[in-house]
Image (cartoon, rainbow, N blue to C red; front, side, top):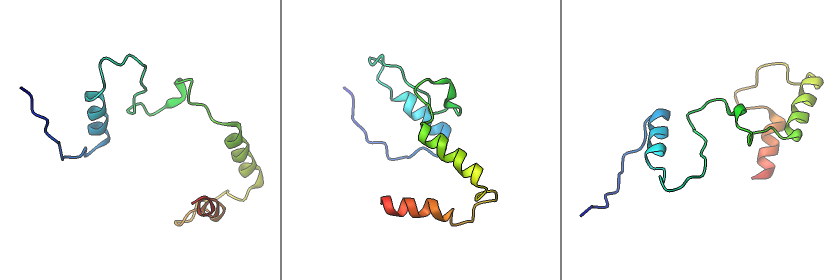
Length: 86
């Protein structure tokens, strides 16, 4: 007879977290999964950059407004957008 025991320890590294997730996958669920331990998502067809993001990046590069390191507090226009959305 099994016991349901709540584990209170938390993963201490990315590897621990990935191992924990893999260990807890439902073996009866045959849907494909994407490994969190894989650093480059470009080989997965479902991970594509939206054209809106591509256009925003191209516009930022062409403007030459961001040709430096970002300040510690972040780039002001980006902070404003985040503030307005919250």
